[in-house]
Length: 401
Image (cartoon, rainbow, N blue to C red; front, side, top):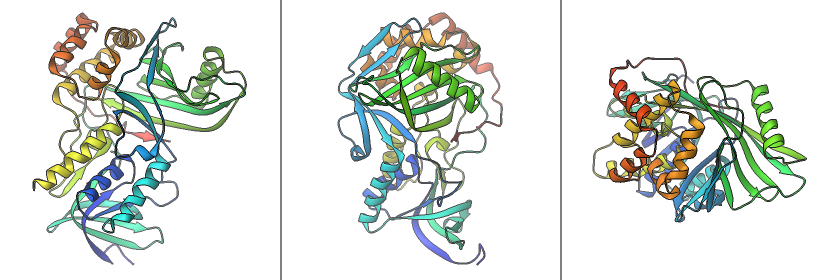
């Protein structure tokens, strides 16, 4: 069959079955909408299992997919100084993509109105009275889906024009030690006891799953990803010389690259076509966190549809984006020392307040107080120059492997 062959009419089509696509499909289905999620078939286009983390007060909509959570969080400075706190009522949560997909797929099936279709999407465009998605099914059949609205979560090929673009790139090992080495109730968000790159910053990240099991990651904020060999060398140094884990085995690994940028991601690409998730600007520029934002974005989309105004509201407020733009530029220019900046921030600001700030839930007064606890001179100089900088294009975009 050709691409002009079978056609099927749908209320809403969501392209992509990652965190953003499934969160939105879940929210719209709960609001009584009929949704078709188009996911890539098994093969090279389907991403490997991934880990998503976020903080939340109390159980949320996807609590059944939470693999582990932590009530205490820790940051370690370059010289080993420890900042540890219990940011109650917030808990830090880990979700594995496989369990999350199973949960949402089951709920969509139970609804009786929504479904998941395995197909490769080739094009999304406006059509008469709606939009259409041209794809090829897992059996090789060409299919065109017609819908009132399409929400596309596929990664963008190129980051839109920006003034600053850093990459958060990382590799993590799920390790199993021969002796108990981890504190299951404490997660290490940033451990700066690792060699720092010439440009940007680097840190370790430890999420304990049991006294003898954890996800251990090496992460950099810089302009260029490392080679696989370099990541593994950094992880061997961190697990051996810093954490001193002793003998351990690596059960699995994960690796990814997330753009941290002040680019403006368009959330509407046609009359009936919208972008969501990282492609729609849901990634918090200064941290790379996305999962909590796509949940909020999904609720906002459902509310907009209920009001008869289809669209994707901004996932982050203007104040948050403005402050993130200043921080990214200050880090990229080297005006602030990254490890010292984050260590001092966690030391000077109550952790619960800081996490709410990073999630966009702080008040203007709280944000003013947080700003006073940063290097004021370099940050003001950076803020003053940003309006005069030209936004430009590069070839970088989001990747996860």
